[in-house]
Length: 241
Image (cartoon, rainbow, N blue to C red; front, top):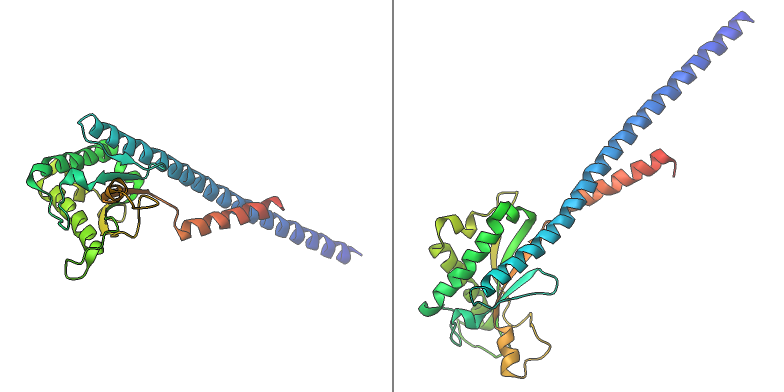
């Protein structure tokens, strides 16, 4: 009888220890999941803040340029600054910024650099694209590259002017992403991304001849999203739901 009681007591102790260890492990996992969730809640808050800061910067750039008599537009979602190519003096079929328009182009670049650099707000951004666009008028030049080539070279011309002639403290290529890559990128889209539904009038075609400066804010990576899902699963498992 005594032996059976001893065995029973030992079994009870082992069971209690096992349950205690499981509870401690569960508590540790719960704490880890909660800490991870808190970290990602902060990340999501930062991403929301990035969208707000991006909008503020574009509005500031537009208003600062308007105060100097330079009219550019900002998209409805506050992500794109559109510069009519007429401000840059491109002649039909040409990608050269005429000398009398270069100072205005430099003022635009200087204003962008000043606003982005203020309080290091460019760190909220992922990439800034300088994008060339044309109307749908056929253009056979540039060795057959047509409007696509023309829009690309126009964007490159603007970027080169900024790169070569902006003051050292306004150099846009000095702004870098977290991974060390340059924040700015240059591309051309020809007539493939029209700004108007039709291009039947001179005004509609003119609206499509533009340089867009597109600002993209930081977003969650696939790894971040997977970690958030993992944290949610861990929290629900800990709650028994």
